[in-house]
Image 1 (cartoon, rainbow, N blue to C red):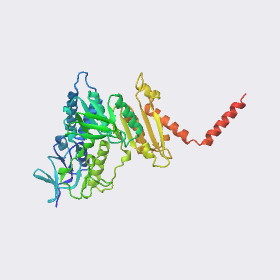
Image 2: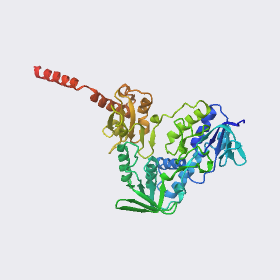
Image 3: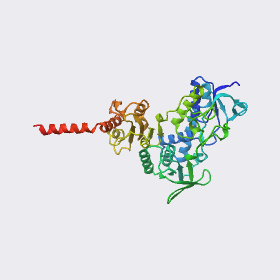
Image 4: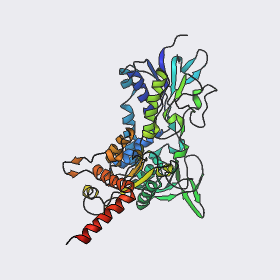
Amino acid sequence: MTVDYNIVILGGGEVARHAARYAKRWGARVALVEPPQATITLEALQQITAYLLTCPPPPTAAPLERLREAAAFAAWQAEQTSAATLAAQGIDVVAGPGSFVDSPRGVRVGDRILRGRRYLVAVASTSSMANDLHQLPQSQIAVWGAGAQALSLAQALQRLGFTVTLGCSAPRLLPTEDPAIGQLLQAQLEAEGVRTVTSATLIPQDPGAGGQIRAEALTVAVDRVISLESFRPVTAALNLPAQVKTRPGVQVNPRLQTAHPYIYACGYALGHQNEAAAIAEAEVAVGNALSFPYRRVNYKAIPRIISTNPIAVGVGLTPQQAQRHPGTTVLTQPLSPLPQWQARHGSGQPPAGLCRVVLSRRGKLLGLSAVGPGADEWTAPLQWAMRRGIPLSALPPKLSLGGQSLHSAVVTQLAEQWRDLKQPAWQRDAAELILNWQRDWTR
């Protein structure tokens, strides 16, 4: 049986569009199935939140007007990779819901059957509990979840003027990240008025309505619940072959291949919420689908961005994970004492900032956790060194035109801590003995 395409991508968001563009750069003939979205996607919610946190509102702006403005911005961003733009790049964009069919093998979209050599499931993740944000009641709002998106959404809604409770069943916020980062961000949210409740239970009412958050003796009644944990990849209507498992995300092997040898999956279809990981997975899945399937995603090198204000970033091992690796060392550098940090933020009390690194026995960077304004920027050289296996001691401090940069100051302080830790005790004792002798015998 002849095939029409090298790869057919079942999409619904920017990850699928990125995969289509990437496949086209391989020289492949690509079909992208774009289903209509009846509910808000996780990608759109992330764009709305980022807009609200990075664009300060006018003094007279109403909260619901700002939400509609942010939703319009997210729609405008989606239009930048519209069907016309992709079609101009040689990608066959097919609008409508797609589903797999067995005879003949392919994907049915309306009256068409798209036959491909390989298929990529890169569908969006949606939730009815996050729909109609522009119709939120201006009263008690609950954001349910412990991950990065829950924190940034709670902060954005609080800054709009809503009364926000951030609740989760986990014992702490950001349970997979460095606890020091989670504590700093929790303190920031609470200082802005967000109530945080951990180790809690959510008791929702009707879908899209209010509910209760309960934790020990505390009960918080809310008028609307936005659950980040309710986002699920849109796979039910795909009619996936029986051997492709979903629990709830599509199950894949390390090469992003499902149990069906011709079907791959990536991004939000796998059930996670990390945009950077989704993009990396899209490229690996496309490469494996179009060529020999040997590629794997290096998740240790992918940054985990928490887009709150201040921003936080994590890469590689956390200090808690490092405890399971003998010989690792964790170094911590607060940023507020650094003159460069104080100069960057002017007079007054500078915002809290922190940088922690996990080092191997030889001083190679295995993990990085940081929080503070611009953390994704001033940690970029450390992330670069981590990807290339460069030891901390080999990073030269770079001078900016106005003196030492913030990155240089952080590297210098961490390198001094590392040198002090690795200097043998007998060297310190011998140096002290010689200096004492010099002082005692100098006339």
